[in-house]
Length: 495
Image (cartoon, rainbow, N blue to C red; front, side):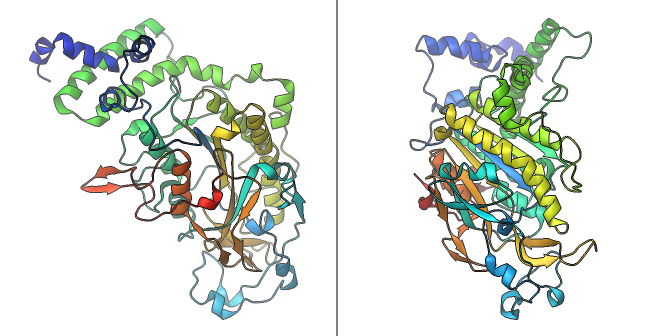
């Protein structure tokens, strides 16, 4: 660092760089109230605050997204896509013409046979969408959602599949959907991150790569929140450090970072300044966020935040207390939306049922069904569902073929299946009460309206008012985007 830089600072330099100081938001608020703040789409403002709100390409339908990601791939034919033919063909082999060019994760082709489903399906709502008996609460919301039975991907292992669903490609180092949306639109939350991650269960295969900012500046990455105690680790001041002491330290650090930023122009320095400032404000905002004492007893009961886990053995549910943890995450998601957070991931692991399917799936569905339905109804009652996109999905589906991975008994689970799987979407500009896509009589292949993950991403960006081919970032000489080199908006999904 050149000491003369301090001498060269002019009044204009000071006013320019002070926009990135601890008081930046208060300063901006004063300017805005006086009509002196530049338009949100002004690039100079985005430079001062990387997370400043930016104008969309066209009028958006969605202002926020809650993406409920069930890691491990739930069985679609046991939850969303009934296939009576499977029970008729139970124990029979598939024709070689169907399996000849197919790669499986674990199934051995020579011994693979069809496995039926014990689940009963019932039509719900005026739309008549069928849901499994494991999801009666979500079924009661059928008229408010759209069920897609024709999703497909080109990945059949968990980590690449999860990266594909979250990043648009199956490789490390790429930004996730939440990071792209915050890069494109900025954040409207003054005291919380624009992208928050909530987890329950035993942890995802992809770990933090599923909410990474990749090659985007790091201030766009997801921030992992805990649903009890300190929401973010190391956020509270250590013993002996007062708020005043911290304020002085952050001011000095911010001054040094701004001088360095002016000298080298590294965007990561601006990200670091922004992160320190946000962390300072979060010390007040996050304890209030996770304090549920202001919620009514009726709301807490609806979400099931005090539910005990059932007396049911489940190896993959994530250990004791998952029913309460997942319910709190769903309620926190609504509270985050109310506070202006643009993108929220709720992860639960794991739904990877290679064996013991009936018991494990019943445990996980029992955990997820009530709080997710409560979230949808709560958002709707508060007038937030129309502007909040809610997505339930995973990385791929399961085979109609049975699998017995651990030797308990023949054919108690299902293998990975990328050719066809289901997810549902609600709110945020989605046309509700409909089914998109069809699969054949055993759920092996898609027969109508296929939707690839790139199309899914293009559609979500469209709902946020973003043209997916225009949301790009230049890295190592190439313009990258969430939809890679493909993707079309699935117009049948749009209201």
